[in-house]
Length: 190
Image (cartoon, rainbow, N blue to C red; front, side, top):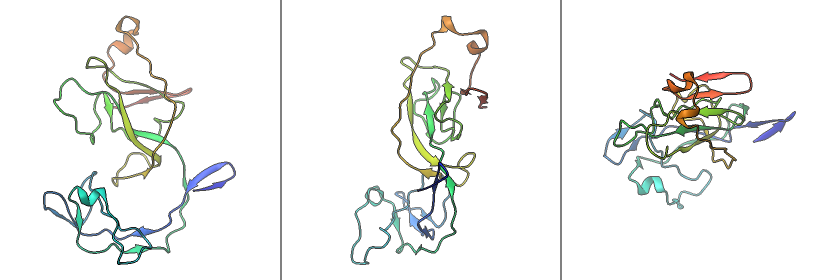
């Protein structure tokens, strides 16, 4: 990360060629077919004798050969915009929840506007609400069309409030989608 004129930027250190990998079900993947594909990386810059242990390989993801890394990369500067990619509540209609598609109760919205200073409203469909959040990003475009953003971990302060049904406005009573609010905008998700 670099700082310029009060703005932080992520800068790439290296690139790698997509390896041919085998998933835990023995399906060969020579490209990223869907989000959630795990890549068992080598530690870039280590000797060939050293093979690091990896929770990815422990889960059954294997690669055919070593990954090719490139150190001469395009000098991109990606503005830092920390946000939570996946935040929401479980729906009442499921026995289990797939974390990839967004739902009416939130989830994997991958919206860069769900960030510091945004108030999010989610319809509660199960007792206790069961708020979940994760998939933090330092930056990404509008959504994760290529399957990833600039992934990171964050530690933040969150204020969680419950608005009781009796205190809802008429518009809030019919809300069936995640709604964001900033000082100047409403953020509508469909």
